[in-house]
Image 1 (cartoon, rainbow, N blue to C red):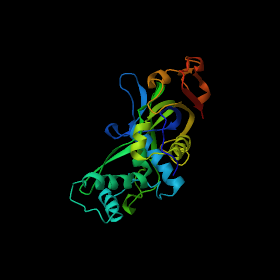
Image 2: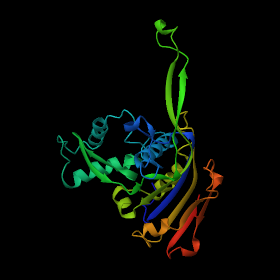
Image 3: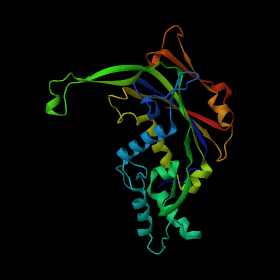
Image 4: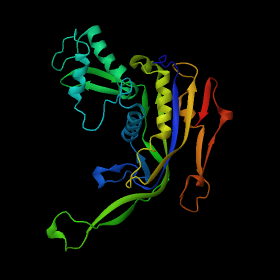
Length: 287
């Protein structure tokens, strides 16, 4: 693998949804998540990390060092046990992480093998304990630039399950969609935490690529059309950083060009970066 990451980064991702549900809320009948006070749409950090994991799994074939730890139907104790099988000289104790260097060896094995542990961290203190890792990459919730008005769409089912129901009226169902919304997600990459997990320069390039392409293999009728539209990366010269994150985020403004009508496409917005106010020691990359 490449050298361990030694620079701090922040990033802003703009992504859109058209006639789809970007992140349903199970506590609200799978309605798109929404801020009840402002009506802005929300997409959780967990949702975004899931899409990154899925893309890395597809792109890298689920093999070390790009295996994925948190996946559907995974039995984590069984996966944790493989760390001890790979290091037979270390004795496993129930619910306890081995002390000192033995514990570090087990945790580092998990970091070296799994991209999502290296990137996002993981709590592996299950019955078979592999430690706890704080990852260098963190997301905030994504928020739509403008209020959204979710629509409830009625659908019908033409087929039936049982023969006895063949003459009955067709089943009616419902789904929620957002006609259009542009979301803004902000994130952070810590170089000191990257050093602890072994997150590398090669890893960060793969991560940027996953942000740009994670919706391309996640299409479904429920999600409508989703796409990453713009990624802005702030690279610092040093590992601790050269400017506060909020100051960098404030350099990016997104404005609806015509506020007299609801947005329906990406071209309805103007996204600008104030390069004149960029602090020293910061490089801005637009993808």
